[in-house]
Length: 295
Image (cartoon, rainbow, N blue to C red; front, side):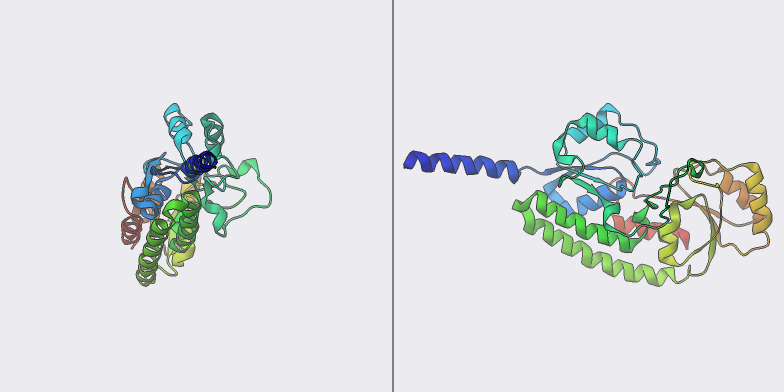
């Protein structure tokens, strides 16, 4: 009887070590915004590796050996989804051989699955360049949608590591309170932007514009992934000289030449905005800085 009880204790002890890891969770974040969110919601119970920096275009990343090695050890994969990582995430998952982070597993978390997407297309078309048919994936630029993702990511951490459920729940509640307060402050600031017209490099800013009530006066490129032409810029310049435009904006990783050229032609400032937070930068600091530069 004692021997059977001993075996049962050993069995359940080993089972608990498998299901409820005592070590910190290894989190693989595809973009800096999700790395920052995972660090905030996980605290000391997570080790976060971010696959890209805010100096990179997340559309064009290679599944290099270093990334594969990190993915192989991950307990949780946090990415945008909606096709943003279509060119490199599938090969990375396949090469990693890590069952924990495959599609359909608790360790596979796509932020875009938990919000309503804008710019959905009925059918993909090769002439669209880098347009995502399932919807625009750049949801982190809307603080309300980011809050929705934070709620779901906090829940997912509790599912993967139930031993530390109380820890994750406390950090989630703390973040949600602080973020809601920040949203109220940002909404007050953003009233100065409502109804203003801006020229964008491409469609990546749609969620920020929708949240702040900013109109789009034009785009430097005809479609994402297709470079601007001199003919397009000339026509855009002629049209915008008759319109009231507040600013030209482009992401910090994008070529500034077209924006600066148009700025000189029509006398409107061109502003580079950090598309994602910097290394170890809190989300609140990044969005505050982005909004201040836009104002």
